[in-house]
Length: 124
Image (tube, rainbow, N blue to C red):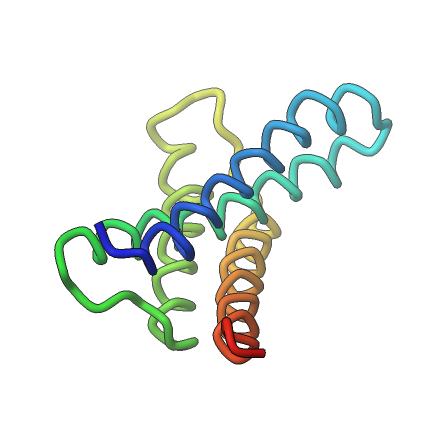
């Protein structure tokens, strides 16, 4: 397995999973602002979706999605599916277009973090 896969996608995915668990089991029960906690979960999901996509692409020896436009289109498609189509077949699901924005922001923030990480690199 490629070291860049472990460093970038698996490590990022593990951090996102940890933050999601903290959000789900600490922030949601302890805060009166559940809306912030729920949007936080969607923001983390955007980063998680990008990690999953790029990790799978890396494992299949394909080029990962690292440019802003393709990543944005992927994240918006995921968010729209999740918030527009899912409520049509899952009765307990509720669509919220602010969640689409949260998913997009989470993925774009992670993409930006990866770019900063690459600039700093091991020699910085």
